[in-house]
Structure formats: C-alpha cells, structure tokens
Length: 331
Image (cartoon, rainbow, N blue to C red; front, top):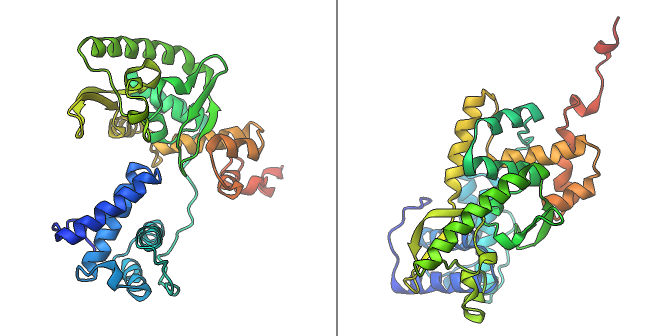
C-alpha cells in the first residue's frame, strides 16, 4: 500500500511515530523533515501488515524500497528519502542499525539541467510582481535564497550596515551569510517599517510573540516578543499556538509567493517552466557569467560539495560548453 491516505494505526503504532518525531525534534531536524520521516515510517509499518519494525529487518526494508521504485514509480530522490527515514528509524530510534539492504532496485535518477532565466527574463518576471511577493522574489534572485529561507528570515538576520543576509538553519541545518542586494535595500527598509508598526499594534493588543527555534521559548520566554526575532515576512493573520493557546503570527505561507510567481511568469510571456527556485539557479549562473569564482558561489549558495555548484558551469549562456560554432566563422 503506497498511498498517503492511511487510516489511524493502533496505539502501539502511534506511540512509535510519536517516539520517532520526538527524537527528530531533539536532534533539531526541520519540521518538514520530521513530517516526511514520520510519514515514511508509517507507510513502511502499514505495508508490512502493521507489524512493529522490531519484528522486521533488512529484507523487509529492501522489499519496501524496491516496491516504491518498481510498483510505485517514485523518483530517485523520493526513494532516497524513504531509505534515509528507515535507516534513521533503526539506527537512532530502535538502536539496531540495519544490515543487508543492498540490492535495492534503484529508481531512475534523471540527469536534468536546471531551468535558468536570462537577465531580461528575470527583469520581465519581476516587473509583473508587486508588493511583498516582488520583494521576496527580488531576494530569492539577488541573494540566491531558497524559498523557505526567504520566508523564515527574521529581522535580526538582515544587516543593512554591511549589506548581508544571514540564513539560519538552512539545508543541512547550516547557517551561512549571503549578499543583501543594494537594489533591495530601500524596498526592504520600507517594508520593515510597515512590519514594525504591525508588530507594535500586536504588542498593544497583548500579542506580538513568534515561535522561537530550539528551546529558546523555555530559556528566554520573553524574547519571542522582541522586534529582532520577528519574521521579516509575517502572515496577515494570527494563529493559536497549540500548546499555550497564545495568539501568534507565523511567517507568510510560501504558497502565496509561489502562486504570484507562477502568474507573473505567464504574464511576462516567459516560455520556461520557471518557479521560485529558478531565481536561485539564475543567481548562481549569472554570478559565474560575471566572473566570480565557483568557490565563492558555493559559499553563497550553501552547497556542501562544490560538485553541486558545478552544474551551473554547464548552463552558462555561451552555447554548448562555451564552444564557438565553426559555422560562425564562415564568411
């Protein structure tokens, strides 16, 4: 059974899933990774007839992962995520590292070049955006941010003095520093002035607190109301915190920006499958076009391995591998 729509399991299964989530939270895995790993453990347990993973082993995991590729038709990245979740389950939660999961039928990993916009296309798409979505898109392109990195920026992460943005707990739970584009400085200052007024009204109404990372809520219970910790892009509405019932603001939901960018690409007449992440690809490619070295681009993007960054050397706007066609030399 390979569907996400699974009925609730018995109490023992629910306790297992709660335990998995607790260990992930203690190790500071992102909420999205927590959700994904718990979902894969649940699917594995259901596929195995709701037996406890302690009763299963490497052969069962191998059969499950193979079924994902052969019958489920999942992508290689999806299969790898499932594998990572189950390896984590056995190693970190059950304390019995898996053995004998070699020989899994691998999902085919396609080799695709990233979609990259030309500078003119970037300008055209930005021209079709306004308000907060335009400012977010400008930072995605101008600083090479992933969408959620932009959504999760806090006021203290913006340094106008030195022209930097600090990305906290990015992919792989790593911090990094990237450039604050000069063209975004004025719009961002005006935006933050409006956000600060909004925060002031929230404080007057007895609200104004945001969620804090890790255990900061317990260690410093008052700083959740501090201006420095507020989201750069707050949501329009409050929500009730499940644990305390307190009214808080979350950051803007990423889907709002995704919809705006999708519509802007269509209005701009760009015949490419461009998304929010395309701005990040374009940032890297245009930096390399401007002559910046690949190690600098690697650091700004937050890539652990320079080989990941090297894909952009193959999409520079210079034709196939930068070769000048002999036909262009004909009289």
